[in-house]
Length: 174
Image (cartoon, rainbow, N blue to C red; front, side, top):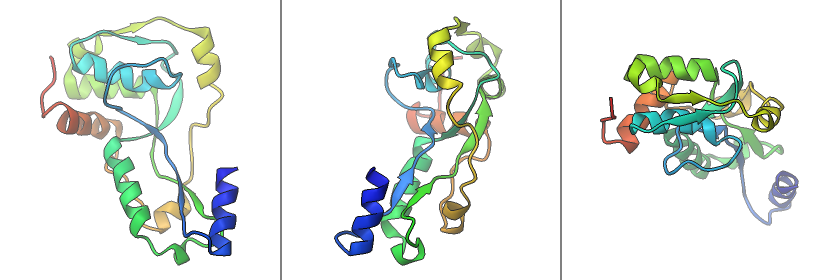
């Protein structure tokens, strides 16, 4: 309903807004949490910090991601864009990277090594799997790309490197 209100209020001139639909932000800083999507960050952030992480789904689960750096870029760009170029559909799906959990783990191995990736413990959770497998995994953010929204990452290796740079001071626990 918020997207409908945004479009209607912008059309009526009550406000001038653009809605942005973010991909799952990965690697999210902070502590692990119980959110169904939390493991996407946990399985990368925790091993890089020298801690074990639980993987509750299979490695073939695919999801849509962007870094915190990209999310900040999306917000800054949305704040400066000429809203007249957006048109009457005021909400945009932001660009991101579609990857399987297996591709995430392979990237972790390439960037940080096998020892770091070995800190991921596989403990299937049918409840989490049931939730996550119903989520969309691929998007075509054509309008957002045409309006100049871009990501900081080109592949999952970049997502891990950006986390190491931005959150870990360039170092991780090998």
